[in-house]
Length: 114
Image (cartoon, rainbow, N blue to C red):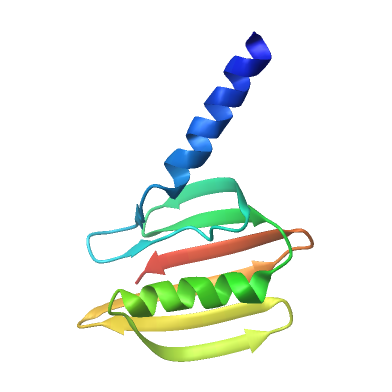
C-alpha cells in the first residue's frame, strides 16, 4: 500500500511540473523540457536553475531558446563553447540570459533576468 501511495505522489508531482510555465519574474517565464526528467529546480534571486537528467543539451537549449522567442524575447547574443550554450535576450528594456551546460548525464539550465 505504501508503494502505491508513493507512486501516486510521484505521478502527481510529475504532472504538476508539466501544467504550465514557471514564472521567473513578472516579464520572464519558461516551460520545462518535456522529454527529460527534472532532477532539481532551484530559484535564485533574479532567475532559476533547472537540472535535467539526460544528455541532449543542445536540444534543451533549442527548446528554451524557442520558448523565450515565442514569448516575445529577441535574442541579441549567442555563444557556443564545449558543452555550453549561452544566449542573451531583450524584450523592450528588460534583459534576460539563458545558459545550458552539459555536465555528463545532467543538464544545467540557468535562466535569469538581468
